[in-house]
Length: 369
Image (cartoon, rainbow, N blue to C red):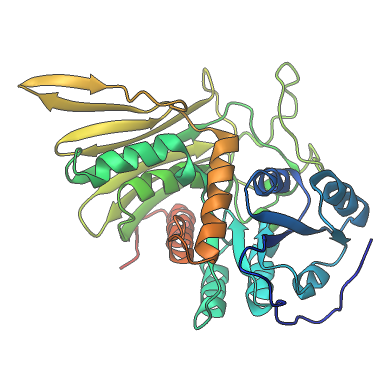
């Protein structure tokens, strides 16, 4: 393993055709998605990986061709060759590492959720203000072809004025346990882990309207259901069947400044007949589902017509979504594109999520205006 100085310095003078050099903080499962996407993106070089487990960091660095591995992410941030950083750590350190990366002069791609709380999200925003550093949020479903194709229909006015959306992601046996089930670390349960995906997807398609009121509910009744052994399930590396401090189910009605509204529900564990995902938006000229697959409904010649766009990925394509996300992050950092998932969107989504929990705790609607 090679090392670099422990203090941040200006990036070296690189030739115009030099690759965009990236580092990844955290070497867990989601880091693999980022690293695979970086590896497959032309003009990108994976330079360093940092993880508190140095052996794992070195193993992942070797797998993806990174020159250096660190046990301390501060060393990665001090590496003058690293221009951009993916933050792929547990939720409780998203804010601290994002801020440290900004202060070290790096462009930052932060996995979702941006932060556990509004205060943490706003701290990242303050750190980025007045700098030319890009901070992008890992809302990967925005980058999927089915979303972008539907966005082109919406932007062209084919659905008219959007006034309603529904977003749902339900798992029957999907509590990963471990840090995912620890509220202090994760910040919340399925709402912050999987519900955020469908909430953001619908909100992005609606044009990112400002939320003004949220009525939310959370339920904690089933836990991780460790007694069920007849179905396969993903479990975190630190899984402990005796520990769970997050909700099973969250639901909400969200109202926006423009008069539109959204119905949201998500669950780690529900006595449902099957796992499901459903995201749809409705306008005064037509409606559309983007999940479980892209389909549109409209009127033509006084008839109701369903439209099935012929695309290779009518549902979310995990690998392509991450490759598109990374390509957008790199291009935006280099000033060639606008970021599809800017920092301010991450802050607003954090405010909505926090309002769901606040409303659930208070037992009443929460105003955000």
